[in-house]
Image (tube, rainbow, N blue to C red; front, top):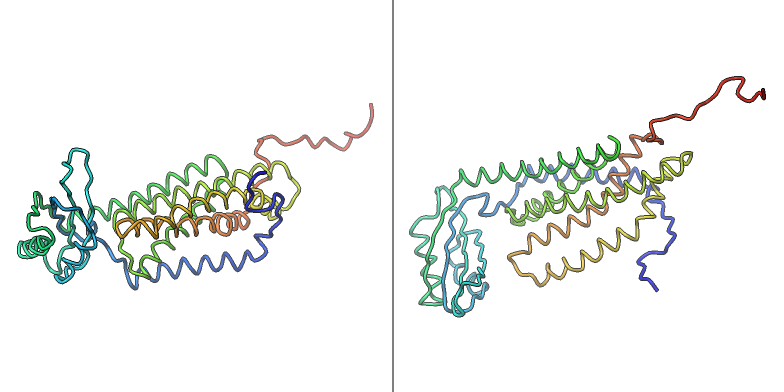
Length: 322
């Protein structure tokens, strides 16, 4: 017996409330954009600038203890990441502590760095700091610019791919779904002021890839059915295609979400923002592949024959026997 999350022959009417679902998606995108401009993003050190300290200790790293030692200094966003390397000795434990640039300063001052070192030495008096690096506002600004170019480049490449493989209506639908997913992800990060750094940019690019994969699967089945059912209304063909790929969509999304939820709960603070972004992106990406992408295709309409040839229609004497 094969495991099935949904019955083999489902017949859900995904387009019964097409206007409501598509309208809700448009309103959600507009709200996300408004929240972004009204509240802004809580940029991490990568985009704000700051200083990274490398620590070297003979005691095992407990991130919670590091945070507790630095909390009284009130330095804002602090990132603590343990570094693992096979070349390290058995009693060598290394971390990277990143501190955001303080208000009105080009980088973290020596006084603040000394305070951080003194606070961390309360955990291990023998702790050393072999390296200190600073990221200035200019570099962080360039990182923001590069992140924007990366996302726009990915979207452009996807548009070209969909346009060449399908029809322009499908490309527009795919882009609308991707804009929906990216906008809602940025909106929720802005609304809850979750730290936004380069890891989140990587998560957004992952969301774009996952979402377009799900959309292409549905589009590919729709194209097959459009050739198979040439007289069936477009809305029925799209609805049939969504039902035929429903089991695959739920299986793929469900198994991925199981792993992500485990990481979200047990993965710790270092990767929580990244995992949350991908989890949210998979949820909205699965939704948008049907309720956004296909709604756009339905509104634009598509031609029903890609063969490039038309069946001869004959003339007024075609049915007369010689």
